[in-house]
Length: 464
Ligand SMILES: *Cc1c(COP(=O)(O)O)cnc(C)c1O
Image (cartoon, helix red, strand yellow):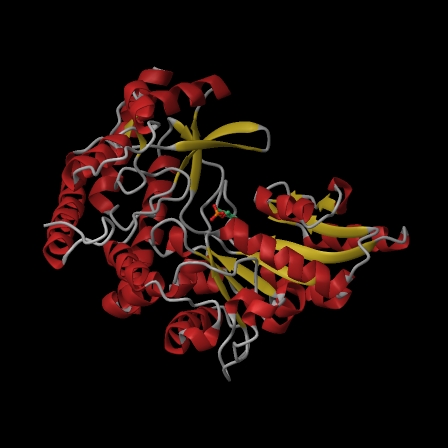
């Protein structure tokens, strides 16, 4: 009944497992509106059980999936419409199904001639994204596990391109709102902490005049400015740095211009996002996370380079064991562009949803998210219970109840204790803020209005 060698189930078993898996997927999605968004505490027994080593004898698919679902029931659920914290990742079902198929076929897609048309599938999505950011014909890149891996790949390319082997006196420019992965990448790339210069901000945005002054001062000291990292949608507040001015400055000074659009990049599909990210086309490298603003499952990041030759100059290598492989005209060997050689085929998880749902569906969903953020901002700003200092550039709204930081912390605790919505917090200019980000593809106007009601109710309890 089961497998010939214990590892290969027969057709009947494959189909039975598939049916069971699909019905659990459908049940999960259907059950979300009634499910809690979080369940903290009480995981002790489950944690202990999940740590047990695997048995010698076969288990039962059904019970093992039950184990998974129990394990997944603790903590926080980013696939839930009430998940308004950090960056939601609903995880499009079409993308998850694409993964299952891609991984059973298990083709090798970092060397083009081993799967040319699959590599073309992945590269087609990358070229489309490059066009979305106004990068020139010939731009290219790769799909990574996320923004952090993409950023490291970009920083290593920038280092190689602008500094060569000598790292002495290197300087790169960020702000206090830049994601930590830029400084971390610099550290991994062998640069000392002193290489990272924090440029002052105005209204949460990098101040181009201040950046110009710092670059000039550093040059006067004999240092070597090489990289300017702008953010198109900061993690804390979703703010977009002044990309046209910063791109101009980087070009004038011969610095590599990196734009971190990990969160904001997807919104470029909308007219409003397009306008707010104007100037991104000057970038030498762009990072965008489809697992943030394109609703894909976690594990999907993208790096784009204006000149992919800069990626291969830094990352390409070869071994005798690869001597049989031939370059394929017009298709990249992705292993030359970054860190990984063997990896799963990540192209289908992007290609399938884009082709299945169509780009217009993504644009409409993202437009809706911009509307939701505008609604949240309007309602909270009009309410005397709250302080809402900044209008959102994209979909993140930060706010605090009138009163001190402790009131903010108490509000956050009360809101999240209800387990219907989940918010996160941040610190901006030294003060505690709650942060709400309605960007899941499952969060619509009704869910957002319900969230506002919960927040108002809790705020009255805190301040009254
Ligand atoms: C999330 C984020 C990152 C890091 O990306 P991961 O996919 O979490 O590794 C980098 N930059 C910004 C602006 C982000 O929001």
